[in-house]
Each structure stands twice: as structure tokens, then as C-alpha cells.
Length: 553
RNA sequence: GCGCCCGUAGCUCAGGGGAUAGAGUGAUGGCCUCCGAAGCCAUAGGUCGCGCGUUCGAUUCGCGCCGGGCGCGCCA
Image 1 (cartoon, rainbow, N blue to C red):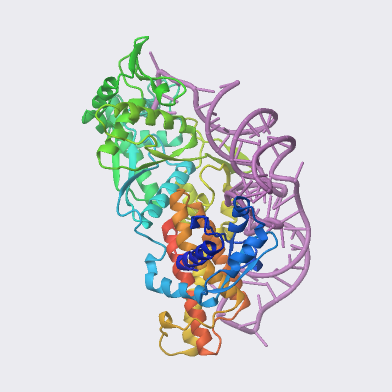
Image 2 (cartoon, chains in turn brown, orange):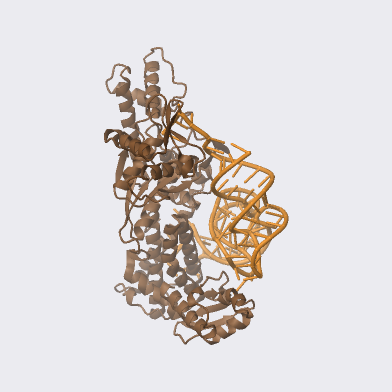
């Protein structure tokens, strides 16, 4: 059912209320979707909400309101339930209309221009080039990519950015780890760094380095550079396999090269919120809601990661992104207050006007990965983790994406590798894709059974669609734009996943209960048109999630 | 100890002031001479962690407990 129907009903109720209770402002009317079909298509709790202010019995008030409703060709009937709810039932024609809308809008059905092309930067993955991507990065990538697509669907101009932390101690650590492996390989006495990276991939890089014609690993800078290039290439391949694409890559090292770090420090000094203590330079982040002040420049003269972080986000703002969204593991949630505090301080002079809530964060919980009935601790340094690539190879890209998006971000969840592999056939993604493939198959069958050219289903008369399952499907189709709008407002792609599962489920039920290709041509065409509308919405939704829409399975 | 997040069916999870709390999976029993059985239908399974408040109404909001995760570096 389309949004027009809903606003039409609100209009009716508002006018009715104006007659019954002229002293009440009419803006209070809200409509809900009853869980029970017997309660109609919409219900309105206005009488209960207003009863107290009007000192009236809610049920009587509801009865009067219903009696005062203006006539309408969409509204079938309005009745008062025992407790004062007004239940509204709509005529089939009001629901059938949605099929025409879907045919007309096609791939654009559900999209809107409400953001008006405003820019937003979505930063995600941002894995350090110190190891392959693991399943946690997979959750990040799936979320970031889907959130980007969702924002685009509502008219945002989205830039997807990957931030490379290529200037810190961890990179040095990587270089030392590889160097140690090279030395071991060559039989040179070597001391492995205490907090070095122990994964097998470090050894592989060491071997490649030697195969590339290097006699030894004594040039640490060259070793490090080689390792970073290798790992970045691997990560790019992983992301490619996952179907994730970025518009830009931002290097931390460029913040130093462009003197943005120095400028950020200067801005923080100018704010008057900086102070020296114990040989270090601090910022009074506690004045911006942090629980303790933070060091900016260590006593050894180097900066903490906090400073380039602030510089990076200042750069985002200066690049024109008045909205910024970061996808991060909740284990980094302490940086939220800190980065915002730094931005507020740095922009306090000079009137940049960065909002307090800038940037926004979508924090997701780490996965508990189970394999062989045991929890796999994800640890880069210990080298024990499941790579994203391994998962994609064994479970499939669509299934991994759909599964990783099927929980809200801030919920912990258990990813059982064995289950995902062994039951990949039963993964919910196939349930949705199957509905899509089934519809194509019905269209093929039409040709086989009835022949002739494809009928113009866009022009089909929909009046025959009056069955309970058909009306329910029509209603569900009409909810899609609201679902998108909501998912974007809450940055919650899982809502789209649940919607698609429900839509597919209703379709499967319908398909089993009713024959689509009946002999009466008008009914057949109406049903085929409904199927096509379902297919269109499945396509639109799946493509937003980055999941393919196969014609055959 | 302090801060953030989470406790909903055996398991994995939706819902988030509104009527009888849902789905998937697992269990049990049915449905292919008929458009794709990767599907459908039915049955079973719950003190929505506990308590006290706010409200016409609380699983949902507030406070306090209990249990779990994460964070609390001059690491990132």
C-alpha cells in the first residue's frame, strides 16, 4: 500500500477529529500497522491518547470520530475496537495501485531524492596493512558498503573511503617481523620482535621478498615497503572478491606530507585547551565529555594516534563533507568521544562550526567465530583467525554478505563456520534468491503453456487481485519505501534483510496456495503483474545489499 | 571500580509505549500425475534476566540489582 493511502487516511481522521473536538490541534493523529490482520490495515490510537485531555470516555470519543469521518473511496470501513482503537480497513483498489507504481518506477522504486545530493563520506574497513582481512573486516565491509548504498538510495552523494594507517609503529613492527623471518630463512641469528606478527603470511612475504631477488633482509625500509605493498594487494583482492569498491584511499602518511598534522596541532594549541605536563603535551578533552585528558605529543616528541585522527577528520570537513559516518568495531568506541572532542577544540577558534556529533559512528560488535565447536580467538599477532577470503571461497559471497548483514550492528553474534559451510544450502539468502528465480521460471512457463507474445503486464487490470494473500503481498510491497527510509535513518541495513525475507516468505506461501498461470486470462495477467512487482522489489533490495539476483539457481 | 553495548523459544536472532510477543534453525507430522520441494502447511516450544517506578497501557521508557561483551596507555 502506498504512502498516499496512509496520508489520505490521516487526512480523513484529522478532519473527523476537527469536528468532534475542535479545540484539539489536529496534528496528533498517528497510524499503526496492527499485528493482527483481523484488526484491519491500520489502527489509530488517537481516542485513547486524547481521552484524558478531553475528559472523555475513549470508546465514546472513538465512536464519534468514526461517525464524523468524511466519505472516501479508499476507505472500506472504520470500526472501534473494545479498548478504543479505531481500526481502518482499506478497499482493494487502494492496495492494487502499488503495482502500477512499481512498474512505473522500476529500479528506482523505493528510492528518493530527499537528501538532495548532499555529500556524505562513509569510512569503513580501514584495516592496517599488517595482515589479511578477517571475518571482522567482513562485517565492517558488508555494513559500510550497504550503508553507502542505502544513503545513495535516499539521494545522498556518497564517497566510500578506506583510511590506511601506514605511518605508525605497527607498520614498523610488521617490517621487523618480516625481517626476522628473512633472517631465519637465511640461517642468520634473528630475534623475533616480542609483539611481532606471527601469522604464516609473514613467512610467505619473507619468502617472496627473497624470491624477488633480494639477497638479504637488512634494508628494513625496503622490507617494510615490500610487505605493505604485498598486503595491500592481498586486501584489495579480498575486497574485490567480496564485491566492495572504494571511491578513495586516504593515507595517514599524507597527513604528515601535507602538514595537516602540524596544522591540527596548531589549532589545538590555539584553542587554549592544551597544556604541558610530565614532558608531554595534553589536550583537555574532559571539557568535551571525555573521562580523562589525552596526550597529543609524547615526551619523546612523537604524536599519539589521536592527533592524526583529528587531522584526518578536520580534512574530511574541509573536503566539504558536512556529514561523515565511520564504521568501526565497538572495541574502538573510546575513540568516539576523543575524536569529537579534538574536533570541537580544534575548530573552537576560526568558526568552522563542526557539529558536536561529527563524525557519526556505526559501531559493530566483534563476531564470536566458532569452528569445530570451539571459539576461535581472533588475534592478528597470534596469527589465529579466519580470513575473509577463506570464508568467501567456502560459503559464497552472497551468503556471507547476507549473513553478516542479518543482525543489527551492535548485537554480538556467533558465526559458526561449520554451520555456515555445511548448511550453506539452507542459508536464508537462497530463500530470497529462490523467490526471484521462481518468478522468472513462471514467466518462462507462461510462454510454454499459453504461447504468444509477452503480454503488457504494466497495463494489466489488477481488480482480480482480491485474495487474502494477494492483498497482504500488495501491502508488503507498498511498505518497501518506508523500510528503506527507516533503514537509512537508523543506518541499519539489517532491516532490509528482514523485509526481504518476509516478502520472499509471503511470495512462497502465495505461490504454493494459488496457481499463477490459470486459464482465465484477466486473472492470469493480474497475478503475473503481481509477480513481476515482487521480483522488482526483490531485485531492488538485494542489489542494495550487494547480493546478486540470479535468474536460475 | 568507572564508561558504552547486550540479556526475548533448545540454538541464532528480529521487534522497541498499544490489542493474543515474532522469524529462522532444531524436533514431530503432513504436501510434488499440477507454474522450480533451495518451497509450503500444521503441531510443539516464552516468568521478553530480576525488582521497583512512570503511564490509560511497559517486553519497549527511568532507576537499582544480576549475568555477558568491549573499553578504561605518553599502543592503534
